[in-house]
Length: 200
Image 1 (cartoon, one colour):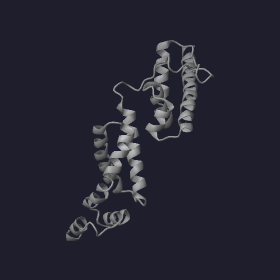
Image 2 (cartoon, one colour):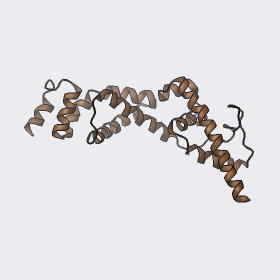
Image 3 (cartoon, helix red, strand yellow):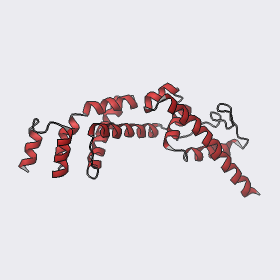
Image 4 (spheres, one colour):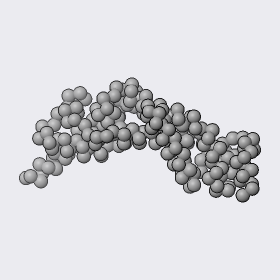
């Protein structure tokens, strides 16, 4: 106990992240993570502000990331702590963005028209069924495509704004949106065919 207290109180005793981590892994005492997390508080706040654009949400995110880091380190061996911490914070913020909207994750069926042309798609099915098919199909997209589709069509963000929000490159954003739309077309048409088969 005295050894741990000495490590926490002596700021010069442990000079780098790995020494602090090694001490934590050896002693399994969460108090040893305090100095380690404290030195990156401003970094985490900056990352959270970059993605969330809201100071209150950013401060809450920092606290939530702290808790997640403490939990993860109980069973995860980390070598490059700063890079790992950054990814934890980024992923947490992206999840917050996905869950932020007050309304359900829904796209207007007129926004995404299904056709072979990227910006001129249409599915000839009843509008209500089309709406249901789109909602179901959105949930089947991978997370990258789902996020970019949501930001582009629901939040009406530009390619540049999506790039700034997610950290994806412009090429990645365009690819996720185009591939997501193509996959939506396939999924919706498959559901339409299945419905037609049941009616027969």
